[in-house]
Figure (cartoon, rainbow, N blue to C red):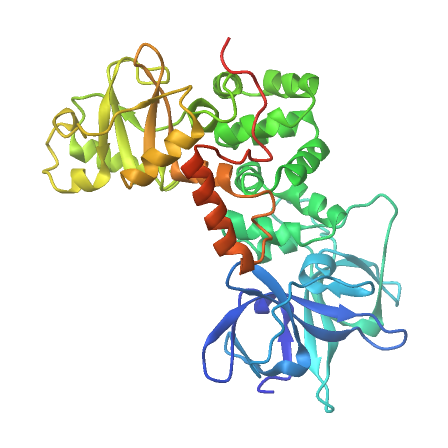
Length: 443
């Protein structure tokens, strides 16, 4: 080994290579087992390989740790990792735990863990980096930090007390929402609820949008109605509608009453449409401008960092008002077309004349054919009065088409899935997504 002691939090996200220098994946956690009289033994790494699959890499396969990278022997079992009894994940389960000093000097919270290689080549926990409670009343003060050997402390488990997730959240702060969602799904259920509960509202909303509905409902019901409504306010209206539709009707209405009126109105509007229609798939927050808006103004709008790429691919042009349902829909302008014209050009002169909108009751199968046939990222949705009510994006359609377990599905069935989907589209049918709404459409 090229290093004898490393801190686990610094390993998170480190790239794993094989002997030839090819990238294998990234470290997501370190797995240990407790021993009676000795510090916990490090048995291996949890590594995320392409396909978002997490696998176990034994420490006996690790030949070098250092300089932000890990070298392995190249022999890796790609079977999906499953945690066994007695195994503990350092980042997910140890960071944030409370420990008590054996000398009676008080307690502290674990912020990091160092692992060290022994002379025999095995790895074990050597020290804990801990933070004591703060002694100052200042809001910005922090407690003193210290290093402690494993033998100098003991873990404290207080009944009913949740384990702090602050350090775990900080460790995974650079993960994209989909990756953080996968990380949470790998945790034991109670720990997942603890971590989710400590995420900021906006971050939690992004993560919930990437989770299966069963876990979405489980987390939302643990938050309490007031906070659950705040999180729903941060979600995309179509995702919030899908989630609320999974709740008992009375509970869903309670949450809608607690949400911001504008956000709640969008969600209620979406809940009126059948699940297998454009209205059931669409989002109500496209970019909408007047015909007099310029290319410069349009490009400024799609540069917003919080805008989903699919929504930024085109701008909708309508008559006033400019909130769904808008005035009469005039057309769409694709961002690539805007790039070909000077900044002062009016968007009303750049409309895509070959793209017809769909109506809210258009079938999901037809929407899918349109997106595929014309290589589109989004398609506008209008009502009977030709007013824009939303857009269906490619990610909306994919989320509808993919099977329930697509986030954890092995890649071996990819070809079979594509063939099945192709058959369904040919026959005009689409498999019903597990989480879509079951309403009867507009009354």
